[in-house]
Length: 70
Image (tube, rainbow, N blue to C red; front, side):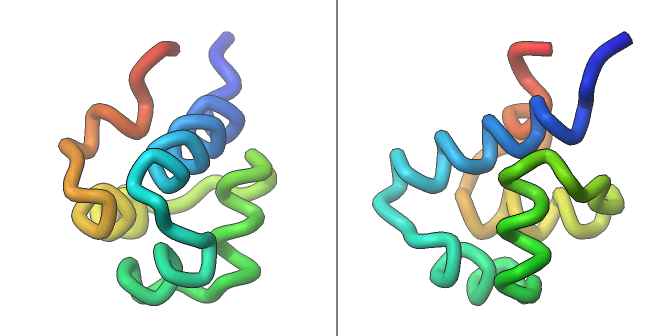
């Protein structure tokens, strides 16, 4: 069984750093609370599809890229 929150968190963190964004900047762009964004990156949160889509939009990547490598 896949650990989807961990995969998502790892990908979000990697993509965020590649874009040169801080967690705070990404949270602002995605309209998500900073502490929630941190929880997502640590694999502690299980965000809704709507939240994942906002993160993908803020990172300018397809939503599927957030779950790749599973």
